[in-house]
Image (spheres, rainbow, N blue to C red):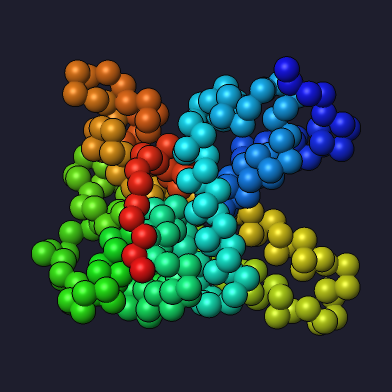
Length: 267
């Protein structure tokens, strides 16, 4: 039978579930929250097992939840070791890295970032395909295959069909806006200490702008929907519930519903 939670546990559970609902850092926050719920058994008031909690509360399997937890821990480990200033921005990238032996993850990730193409904001654009090809190169000594054309590609490195190109272009524009927001935050930080800034909290401004950047980053176009291939409907004309008929997934949606599959570990 489920066990009653203490007041503290109830508060912790609410905070974890709020984090999953907001998912400002997408899979990292989701996995972190699920880990605490699983390890502290915060589900026990209404659910007998973690598996039933995942299914009944979030409509995902226990295996899917564990995938999110593993990917989240990998990113946090990279962050703690300071291997690179850049971190995996999608679960698909983190899951490709999970194929690498733990002792080699930092070195492989550094190589991935060093060889990734630069985006409009001069930051490395890392896709799951680039990680996979880099691992292949480091393992076999082969050279990654160059792209066959210059067609726009999504966050997984897949070509974007014409039917969802407007949504993709909107995502690019939102990305430019997010970069401008970052520039505003930097300017405000530089003004700290100036006369007239005494009553202005640059920390609060930075926090609010961070929320704006994260909302744009994790809410905008990320990948073409694998369920309908950008059309918004499945083969018989039924609206695609996977992408809510939009034809694409943002990082939040992909984090919760990415297909489950086992990955072999590369020694």
